[in-house]
Length: 357
Ligand code: KG4
Ligand code: ZN
Image 1 (cartoon, rainbow, N blue to C red):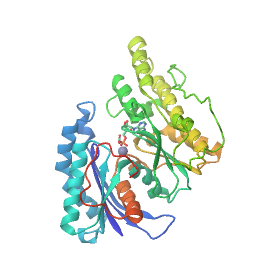
Image 2: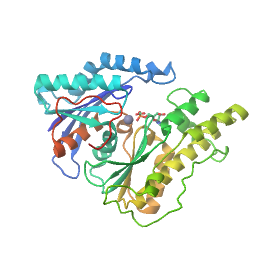
Image 3: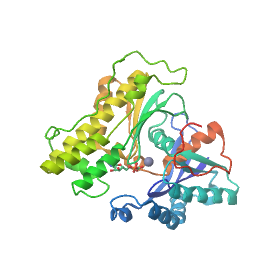
Image 4: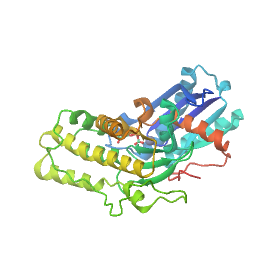
């Protein structure tokens, strides 16, 4: 089966063709993966302007879908189904993809499947590495999300916890802007951090208290995660951001590389500690990191080292599958199609779609 994936949840217009291989261990293969990024357009404003984003999606979507079909050497008649991100995201942006996908599906008589954007990020790991050992705990970390998911079975995604305020990528972007490093700031800070001392600036680490710490695997058969596990999976980056802002205002950034390295140490340590703490409590057999921030070099290195020590395999996608793309949406669409069948045509874009329905 060949599926066309469409993703327009934020500021990337993306289309991809993914085929099912018939191999249960490596179920999907990327035939094409086209992304038209609006970063240059939004850079001028220092962040994403939703109204500009939706208009740009309208301008780009036909060309992006055509390019994806062409690069996959597949005419539209060779496509068997369509997958599209239905949420969460910017509703004006989502609507462009959903309307386009529905129109195409109706015109060609094709099954269509609505996909949760975060399910896409999670399935980017299987798309690249094949089926993960389950249960797995997956950290999705980007400019919009910092969330931990428990995956007990194929196609089942259960949110354990998420950030209470800023996403990790958002914290990077805001601090980078203050340092005059431009937008998006994560990649620049990551690069600069490599040449800095990570203990140069004292920034606060948000600690999670675990008075009821219990190293035995949690019993989650009743469907609820225990409170201590939920607390472990809660993130907060606004305190760190405020401390960074205050430090820069009072003392200046000092050596920018040192500042970036110190900031990065706090963010990465928090992410890695919680990912592995939750994985251990939930008896995970693998962990994964997906989303734009998974490109971070220290995050990859620290997670790999920790996984090595704890004998837990760690999966991270390639760059092209870590930032927003449609191949991951196509993959999650194939998963959903095989488990639950096609969506009814009356589904709609939803800015705050819950992951399990
Ligand atoms: O997944 P993504 O492309 O878009 C969404 O936010 O959904 O992620 C973009 C975010 C931005 O905040 C960017 O600064 C961050 O990922 N990012 C990084 C790195 N590369 C991208 N943050 C830290 N280190 C990086 N190497
Ligand atoms: Zn994303």
